[in-house]
Length: 209
Image: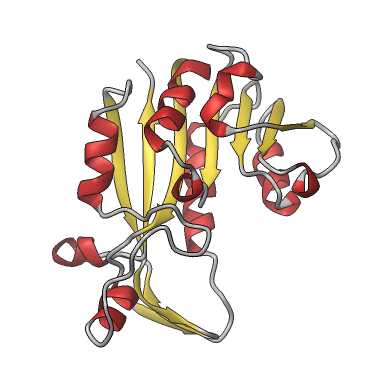
């Protein structure tokens, strides 16, 4: 395990998600991004596929269409109301599921709009990440909702959610182990198996049969 230290915020969670996207996407694919207000990240996804549909909940945060990217305003929980069922090859969402009121409904809506053999890629903070566990040793446990987060997940929480969903095949990957706070980030890109529960983030891969 090799540790790195940076004074600048490291976007290791996004890098991991983008690398996973590269492994699954084909140039002929139609991709859906939920929570698509960051145009630079959306361009990274769109450059690898034929068409990308970006979904934003708030109209004021929705960019204008450009190149092969089309934006729509909508609620993830009602995805199939504005995205045709069985029409999407790859769905991607970064740090959005923790904001959604009915997370099970949102996950099942992904299943509905994905084509057979389609893949959804999500990431979200680990509720018991190392930094949070250390802070809570000296304070009380954080209660949710907190700020914009309806909830955060342990791996057990995610397993319970996914086992209740329409997806029968999934993978949960721990992403990065370390401490991040303010301008200092001290972390290892590999997560030791015995410390998996303290990873900074979870990355979830969902597979439609």
